[in-house]
Amino acid sequence: MMTAENQDQRQRAIAIFQAGLRAVEPIAAMKSYCQLSGSLLSIDGSNYDLDRFEKILVIGAGKAGASMARAMEEILEERISDGIIVVKYGHLDELKKVRIREAGHPVPDQNGYLGARAIYQLASTADEKTLVICLISGGGSALLTMPVDGVSLADKQATTKVLLECGANIHEINTIRKHLSVIKGGGLARAVYPAVLVTLILSDVVGDDLDSIASGPCVPDSKTFADCQDIFNKYGIEQDIPAPVLQHIRRGLAGEVAETPKAGQEFFKQTQNVIIGSNFNALLKAKAKADELGYHTLLLSSMIEGETREVACNHIAIAAEIEAHGYPLARPACVLSGGETTVKIKGNGKGGRNQEFVLAAAIRMAGMRHITAFSAGTDGSDGPTDAAGAIADDQTLAEAAVQGLEPKQYLDNNDSYHFFDQVGGLYKTGPTNTNVMDIRIILID
Image (cartoon, rainbow, N blue to C red):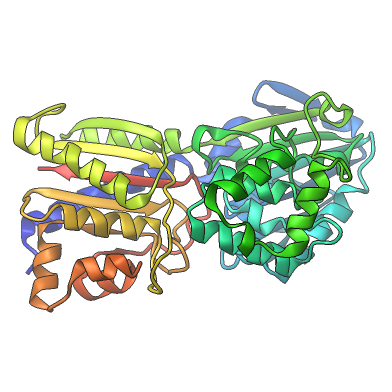
């Protein structure tokens, strides 16, 4: 039975998470970087006289795309000529000028292809008297799908599935995606040239690398075909990759296919890229809330990567040190981290990296009291589930024992969702219309 102490601690963890989430709310973030005074649009210190443009186009992709577009509509109003945004199913908002296309994520689908093609066609109408405003957020890679000649949508879907299941990180997945796409890896910047291009970005990538966020459709690509081959070799997945994909990569290695656009090419000369929100921004606000609640707070990093279970064990090891020795923080303590871990799929269960993190943490917490573990995706969806993440404490394993459940079996089967669905602990928000990776919270009371 949940004690009042446990319930209070869980509510505090959720309050800390929600404070971080508010810091990266797309509309507020957009308006803090973009202001219109008369005909002068100021974006992060750069000024654009809108009277010199005959057209203003708004395009982009990502889970936060609809809310970002709404903010731009509120700023520019009738000055927008046309626009298309591709978002994940259900991540919607009310728009007047910009058209919304819904599509699949994390595995791309036909709607994503049709949406990407429509954006590319609209972008290709831009000329030197056009201002193109591109809105990019997490999920853009899967949602902006336009394969190169010879590679089908089914080939890209199969390749994405293999990369996700082998444990490749987002940088590696996007390296492959860019080299299989017409629109990613600088392809969209090439399409809009000679127009002026401004890209506003909510970062969902560790380190905020511009060429990795949504696979960098508007920036030079620093990766090569050789990097793609290295990724296949690293994970030993070449035999699982569709033949047309392998053939395209090999043709690129042989110089038979042009590389993705690189730094210094002319169509990047009239571009501006601005990150309007990131995981670090969210963690800073989460830390401020934890401090306000009376915790001694340690912000580990916004750049945590690696296998989810190992990351969970490391976090609980820090919590155990705090509980046992008051080091590196005195109790009550809050340990925060962000970033994006990976899950190597071995079972056939249901879950996501955040739920799996919390289940692994709960198992590691056996015998410990006063510790609460929470992890959730800022986009509101964790893997192919309707949960954003999960929360656990000493009551979690106790409830599992009462029900005769074996947590390790659920972990081995990658079935964290059904475990928490039975013992309690699933955290559901629905689509948040933002995305800056994950927030993990460990509270030691």
